[in-house]
Image (cartoon, rainbow, N blue to C red; front, side, top):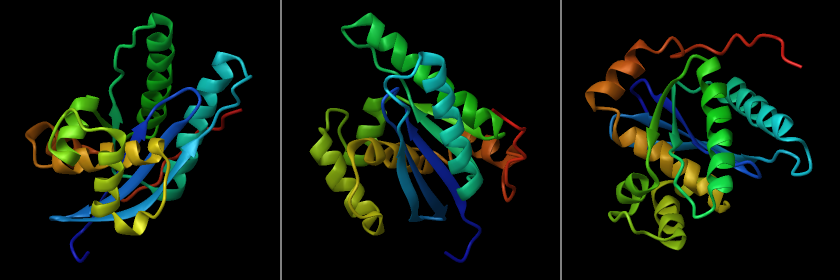
Length: 184
């Protein structure tokens, strides 16, 4: 990548596992930077699990210095409690990204699937196959990491959209590392 690359952090939030994936985009080229999973202790109180998500994202942001971020939107489950808990994990992720000064875009799962596979009804196997094709250096990964990388790729495909391009251009993060406040 000879042009200035934009680093994009994709996040697939969850209380048990929050997947993250980082790519660099330069023109029409995409490169894998990293991926992983933040795993809060499942027996910890809700507030501590949410804090673990924020702190985990802070560590990823400090290490990889993204320029912008994207988060998968919460889908509505049949179980309202599950939907509420997932929404809280998503909120914690968005706060963590926002505290770092990142411009954050949100994408519905259907939009992500459509962007990666070509249909909003794609299954996990199809998504994993396409992520492996688009980012061959990423190697093996779990569903949460693949979903996060898919969100990052979707964000990359929307960089030329007026709202995305202007928010990325205004981002105080480009080329800077976050100046984190002390957190317990």
